[in-house]
Amino acid sequence: MINRRTVLHSGAAFLLAGCLAAPATGAPFASRRIAVTTRGKGRDVVLIAGLASGPGLWNGVVQAIPGYRWHLVHVRGFAGLAAEANASGPLVEPLAEEIARYIRTAGLVRPAIVGHSMGGTLAMMLALKGLAGRLMVVDMLPEGAAMVGGTAQGMGFLADQLSQYLTGTKAGRAYLPQILADTPGARGSDPDVIASALRDLANIDLGPQVPRIAGPMEVVYAVGADAAQAGAITRNFRAAYAGKTGVKLTAIGPSGHVIMADQPTRFNAALAAFLKAA
Image (tube, rainbow, N blue to C red; front, top):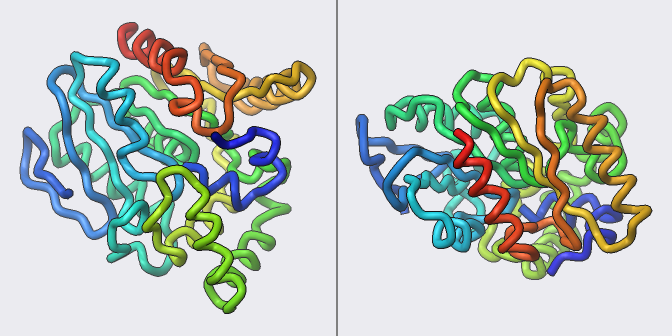
């Protein structure tokens, strides 16, 4: 279990805590950036895991909530998939474009989109493209750097330096696999892809665009057992999403960053209610 306080004091550790199949409808889909598998039958829900995580993050969700067709996105370079086109260059924006292409190719009409951590950033980007019928963001702020107390303006340069350290030095390349080994679901992730994602996330600020997100939106976020710290986290999330009319914010705790693993019963109940309201 990831300790919430440890996560908030370590930017790299936090950001790390995050089988190609043809879709059931529409033209066949192939991608060098993502693989997508589908499970179940019913209304469409796109699930996007966080940085370094694979679709296994959602196994408990899929088993606990029947009646939906789940589209599980696996980023190439994460959790055992070869990096392919994600091996170099920008990552997050191209991933958002590729998931959008999948949604269109599969013939999905404004599906519910659920994203955890970096997946939450991608989910918001997809909603801003008008592709989400309903949006759930799990433990992610619009500004990635704000999750560790910084800003995109202030941490962008630091993230660039961190990325270069992790991929361009012997010590960095030895350190990153150690972090991945201790992060649930991250084994087999490509260090270069991770470093690119860290850099991109630290430079992204979707805050000014949050008011433009259309449709129902819920933000589920983790809080610890300490009441004062939980209150500070709640104020931070409320302020970050204040521009979105009607947004619902749901705190679940005590929990670390991976809420669906730490509090599966409460998380599944929140997600089931969110989907049922559609």
